[in-house]
Structure formats: C-alpha cells, structure tokens
Length: 219
Image 1 (cartoon, rainbow, N blue to C red):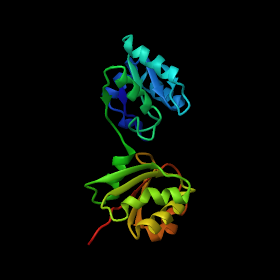
Image 2: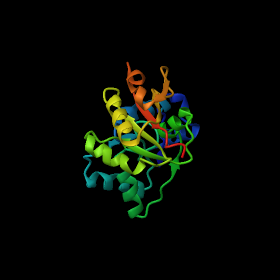
Image 3: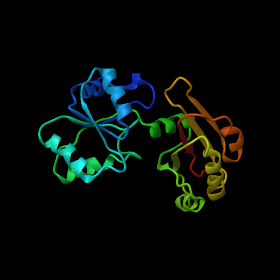
Image 4: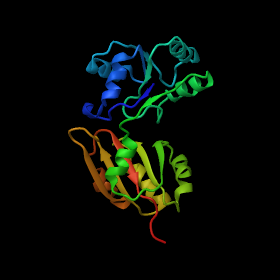
C-alpha cells in the first residue's frame, strides 16, 4: 500500500489512511522516526523498516516477501506522496517486477498544494525535485524550459534559495515566483514576486520551502 501522509498538519490524514496505518503489519519509510509518530498518532502497532538511499536489495526483498506472505505493508514518505524525490520508489518498482498487487491511498502533496497557492496558470508543469548544487548542472537542467510555458516546481533550502532564483533568472529571464513556506503548518506563508526581487522575497526565510516559477507568458 502506497500511502500519502500530511505535509504538516496531522488533520489532513484521511480516515482511510488512519485505518491502513492501524491495520498495517509493516510500515516502510525513509525516516522511521516520522513514520513512528504517525503510527502512534493513530494507535497502530506496525513494525518499521527503513528504506533510504543505501538500503540493500536484500532489504527490499524482505519487505516484498512480507507482502507475498499476506501481510499489509504500507510505504510512506516523510511527508506527502511516497516515491516523489523519495528512494522508496525502488520498492514499488520491484513489487511490479515480482507481480505483486499495488494499491494507494492518495492525499496531500506539497507539489500540487504549492501550485494551487501560487495563483499561476499551470495547465502544464514540471517537477524538478531538489536542485543540483553545481551552477552548470542547474543551468543545464533549466535550458529546455527557456521558452516553455510549463510552471516549474522544486524544493529548496532557505540558505540556498536566493542563489537558486538568481540562476533561474539568468537561465530563463524574468518570471514570477511563489515561495511557499511551511505549508499547512501554523506559520504557513506564500511570498510572491519577480525573480529579480529575490533579495526581499528570501529575507528571513525559514522552514521547508516549495517554490513555483511561472512558465513563460506572452508572445
């Protein structure tokens, strides 16, 4: 079972998601500490297994063996929809290779939530995940979108976001940007402006950031 978890507010955990977590035999997650908080929150008693970038193939097979044995295995991410910028996607891929049945419990997503909060027209968008740190690699990533109407969504950290937006302006030209901070939490904030206004937009930023850069508009 692929199960979406709240991106901040525990009230966004659906009744179906709560039931699945209560009934789960095994919960697989990149960060088992966060997953354990969810299990305790709903009164579950599942065992936990870590699925990070370094998990061996044998661990994946053990988890899938549990599925094959009839146990309810729930795959969650730290926040939002599992498998998006999340190493646990390997688990789902391997499950299909073994012919196992995959189901999902949909729910919160920081990507679509940020798009909705941005107010930008986004008939199409591209999700870039966490950006490469090297300027040359980031410029190469952005090159195909120089003349694109696609909105671009990515994750960033407060200490790096101003530099990231400078590269966006250099590579794409002036665009509108929305910086969504701590979504669904007590201190949620959306800062909108132009890429060239990044100094003011990024001043004093803290917390988890999801950024939306508007696609190219006009002729």
